[in-house]
Image (cartoon, rainbow, N blue to C red):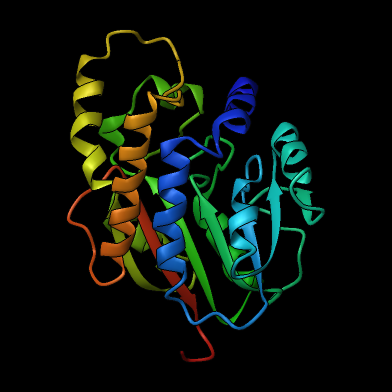
Amino acid sequence: METSEYHNIARLEAGHWWYAGMRALTRAVLARLPLPPAAQILDAGCGVGGGLRWLAEFGTPTGIDWHPVAAGYAAQVSRRVARASVQALPFPEAAFDAVTSFEVLYHLAVADDVAALREFARVLRPGGWLVVRVPAHDWLRGAHDRLVHTRHRYEAQELRAKLTRAGLRVRRVTPAGALLLPPAILRRALQRSSEAHTDVALPPPLINRLLTAALAAEGRWLGWADLPFGLSLLAVAQKAGRET
């Protein structure tokens, strides 16, 4: 990702509809997992550290990120932050009850996503949980993907297969951001410029609130059923061992 985008995200993450809505959506999914009290949680690819704030609701979060600017911002949120690659985690086996990784595996810096998933599995305790979110549909690539150095966008069957290859038991893979997919398709179809530019800009307050509410509503839906389509994929997988 371009350094400028980390500064942009740090400035907007707290209130921007995408981050606020995805926080609500993913929080709803994580809340349904049988995590132990005071769970040890790794946010693998924590970016500027926004996830470390809300993950503290579920236990003690630790963050890692490879980019020095991202890790620097995250260190202002928590002292439990290290600069490291998701393909070589600096932690012993079975160190965490849960691993989260949001919009990380798709990145050019992750040359081997299965290796990263195996690292996530390695540091999970038996019966521990992995929650992963990635962008969907490689045909949706656009100018923003160039700015954030997208290597690949995923399909559900592919993500399931890679989680299985990493030795994890796939519990669910569901689309997310269903209401966002039609306008995203239209935006990509009308996008003429090949120049990289960001999609992370704050819209007018009313639109920002409506989009945030739409994603939060999807989180409530995901409490009992998967979505049929979406702009992203959300996967929940478990390490073999203790049955829950």
